[in-house]
Amino acid sequence: MKTASTIKSSCFLTLTLVLLVSTSFAQKQKLSEKSVDKADLLKMRIKQAGDNQSELKKAIKTVPSEHRQALEFLLLNMPDYDLKNLSAEFLLNNIRLAYQARETAPWNISDQLFFNNVLPYANIDEPRDPWREEFFELCQPIVANCKTPGEAAQKINATLFGQLSVKYSTARKRANQSPKESIEQGLASCTGLSIILADACRSVGVPARLAGIPSWKNKKGNHTWVEVWDDGWQFTGAAEPNPQGLNRTWFQGDAALADPNSKLHSIYAASFQRTETAFPMVWSPEKRVFAENVTYRYIPKTTTSTSKTVDVMVRIWNRDKSQREITKVEVLNHKSNSVLESGTTKAGTADMNDMLSFPLAPGKAYRLRISQGKTTFTHELKTKLNGNQLIELRMPK
Figure (cartoon, rainbow, N blue to C red):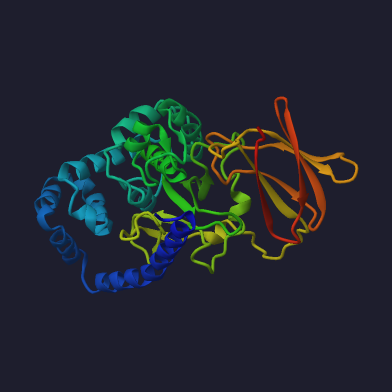
């Protein structure tokens, strides 16, 4: 039986391998594509479809002339496993509904944004379900009065997940669920929630894509969120809308610590169009999803830091550590017991890394007072000299 540490090490090694081999794969693919023209490349792609060639030829033969460029974009850029499995009906319906969304939306977007960030039928390697028609019917009333794609994305994010009854949970079956799978379970990872939001945005003509980091530099684990285009790429957490607008999330401070020179700690945005970069997926190391490294848009323009505090993060669990608890946490002066800081811990559908945090002086003694109803207990704290510090406590009996 594998231990947790063994599984973690295995995932880390798998992710590292994916990152190392991705660049050489893309470079070889790019060189092969340069040597042929578009018509020849399409023929090569059809041949790669194997037993599914007849479906792709049918799509090419029957696609309306005004949609042909979109079909060619999909065929030239789709993963090989889609070439071998997608039907003509699936592709043509997807294209038709994508154009319908573009024509219905009151904002204008470039062809490049449409092809790469509205037209695609998938974001990463999730199952290929036909989601466009259902999401259009659900989301069009939500965005009916919206004038910009950013406003539409905010409205969808604030409304749709409640209508679908889908929430964040580590109990979901897998990370890369399709919208249909997440809706059936009512549960999804941050990646599954992001897939729903990105697809819903695309269904009404909002350019959207997944973004994420393979490993936080200051915390455990990875994270996935959504970027939407509104006069530039903006970001938001799926099922975590901020009433103040886009580019305001619980993780933006963590994202600001990303390292563009580290493949493990860089931030990537998924791309349907082929690139030389891969979107790291430890759950599917054998599959390739293209991406752009967008780290520089999240980190400060200057790398000098004047911070002289330690970010102390607090997470409170129930007695058997099966679920997180919502509690009041106060930071007390160690000598006088006066309250210096206070806040409320996160639980339920909040992301595991969305934690209450306090900027405290390094190398100092403090006392934490945790309260929930009539239960109160304290914890003695000595802060580190630098970096971040995670405090995980269990509720007493």
